Length: 436
Ligand SMILES: [Zn+2]
Image 1 (cartoon, helix red, strand yellow):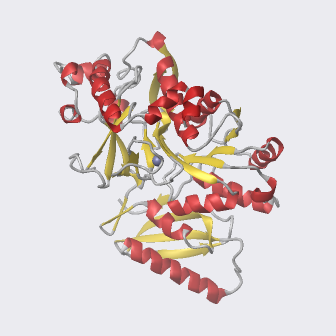
Image 2: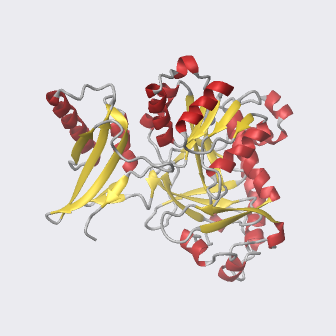
Image 3: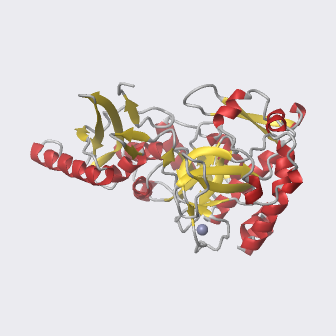
């Protein structure tokens, strides 16, 4: 551990004690508020607020939440807190609905971002000897560049492969002995499938040790499949463009939650409906305040991501608190016959059944004025598809397990491997055809 700190001074922040983290937060919070007040939007919203009074989470809670709608309404420069000539990069927040939002970074913002991610990568054992193949999209989306610079900062040979073109990805992995990946979990499973079809056996033909997976909520069962299929350890990476991008929290080798970088982000969990703070351990919406951002500081930003803070410290030794893997986004939550359902709940069931393949689709429709849910899932290529009785038994089993989890009984449709649509980017898991 101390060897890492000798090589990478910024790694010292990983060794902060609980008290040191708390005092850093107390020191940085009023600075963050003062910085935010330099933006036109906060200057207007929080007129009269004394930044130096905001020295605790309780004090911060006088300040209203900032939402994605606020960011959208103030496009393009309403949240910019520095002159434009100090901004060195912008990204877009990937909005599936509505106008995209521009997110700005100063050179210091980019440095902090890279260091936060590099800390997470170093913590699980990445070294400068690693060959890092980044299979996330480069561009306005933060996924690609978000891990590119940290890998270079560590000193890895960094391969900006980008998304897609699976046969070339495999060729690169074989030729250069890639040891670490950054990949969407859904694409990881497709990559594994492609390897199998191409006769590439990861444990024999590849040299993979780590995968950093994120940008899509995914279940532990999906992660386990990915680890097994590609013969590596997979670590969940959490982030959102509004904060920086990937790297707000990253899983450690204990794989029991994602450590926040609390010297840069202050986290709260609130009830998504009432906005009231929830105690540690309770599931709710993650709300984040940036502590060091210069170009676009955000106070009490509602991420819409549902998770919980994990009480107790982690066996890895880090005193930075952990969040549980994201269950879903408040936007993804489906209300089916009065029950709240996240797609990842369905995924968790499907991926725990070895006979299912890695691709699935949830379709909602209105039948006789009732919500009807159909879960289409590919069967595994290993499964004998000819025997209709076996198929029926599998369908019944999936239906029963989904019923236990969801408290209603969806239709289950088994389809042939490779028959559900796949795209290059984030996987589409839900089609809602219900009458509004
Ligand atoms: Zn840990």
